[in-house]
Length: 125
Image (cartoon, rainbow, N blue to C red; front, side):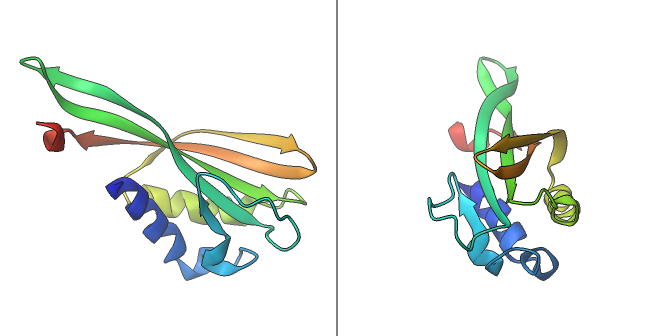
């Protein structure tokens, strides 16, 4: 939950990014965008997609890798400027880009980007 808060704060707190979204910070959604499609383009959806052990010692998990997926939702496919801001923000909070892939569904032109970060597992001990 701490990472989700950091990601949202980073994205929603960047005025250069929110200026490019249909409704500013109100166009940033966790897990899933709402079904109304009238005024929300472009928008962002962010969510964690994996949390896997990375390093263990003495039968205890020491670190884990968390991957977040961000969807940039558009109608026209003009996601380049938004992507540059998202990438800058995510790297600034410690994430590394893993992959990016364009995707089209139901008239939406989407760029899907995965970011990964290593995290200490002390909270589990």
